[in-house]
Amino acid sequence: MTRIRLLIVAATALLSACASLPRPSPPSVAVRVAFDRDRITGAEGRGAGPDDPVRIASISKLITALGVMRLVEAGTLDLDSDVSRWLGWSLRNPNFPDRPITLRLLLSHTSSLKDDVDYAIPLGTTLRETLADPKAWDAEHPPGSFFRYGNINFPVVASVMEAAAGERFDKLMARLVFAPLKIDACFNWTTCSNAAVARAVTLRDEKGAVRRDDLNGVRPDCPVLSPDPACDLSRYVLGSNGALFSPQGGARISATGLARIGQMLLKDGDGFLSPASVALLAGPEWRFDGSNGETENGYYCRYGLAVHLLATTGCRDDPFGDEVQRIGHSGDAYGLRSGLWIDRQSGQGIANFVTAVPDDAPKGRSAFTAAEEALAR
Picture 1 (cartoon, rainbow, N blue to C red):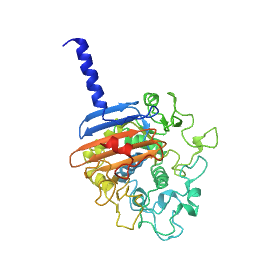
Picture 2: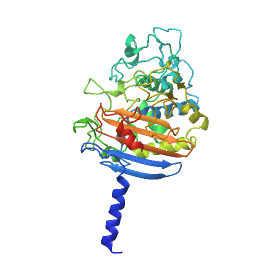
Picture 3: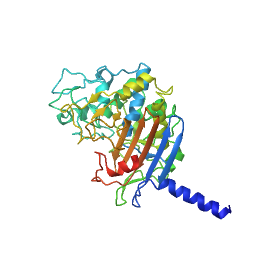
Picture 4: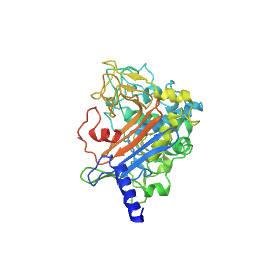
């Protein structure tokens, strides 16, 4: 076979491998990585590569939970203590002052906190001040009785982690999670390598306008929301504002990095966590019984500790459409839709993201968007 013929065959094979990815409009990129317990079995990308980090949105919650479980295993935290003991002030739903709030409730979105307050809390404002607003609390359901997905839970989780471990959240996550798993990832770009910063995926809307991370190879001067241009983090009091580094959505990680997390979970912790901790994460802690939570039109019907369980009977939580029981998490922010899903029985998983998805993107056959279903395949 001539060299030209070989090049034609190779190019045809590459195009064929990528043909299954959704074809986004010019401002959009899409990446998908398939894996099993031991290796990457396929990688596809349009506009970005499998090693390019992106603000992965709410998959960050699962990543944060890995840090929590590492601290639980070390005896620094426990899931069922009143978190007030670490915060140094009493965290209570004012409508149910006798009901303590625990990490288990926060991680499973059953704490009675609501996203009716701004969970992007700037430097100089405290979590305690934010949660003093009655709008932060469910007046009808006590802690532990009702599922309502809420980003605000995770600034509380991060505050507890900081107070208990004596280390800032972004640095703590680098030490507890990213370094042991050998993943070049970070929260708000502070601990990623320069090489990762240079490969950052810019998030844009469907018209091409920048939403986040137009870095041009330079990490942000101020990695947190700050009204003061000086952005003096040296005065920050650990545990006072866990929202600073966006534990609910601010992880920057590649699809390959997500696959490494998925492989660890497929291998029951792989020495990073114990099998018992992986089982706790997967739960479920909550299962919809018809009245004990908000499902968001069938999107959530079972949930663990920052782990979403798919394919619940009678629900619309199956973007794959094959009724296979998978666990993981999705993400949705700034035009990005993302997913990390594993099938523990077959030992297979997938990590993916697509950008420039409109906020009103059409749904597919499930409660997920058609764009997510196309990536899930």
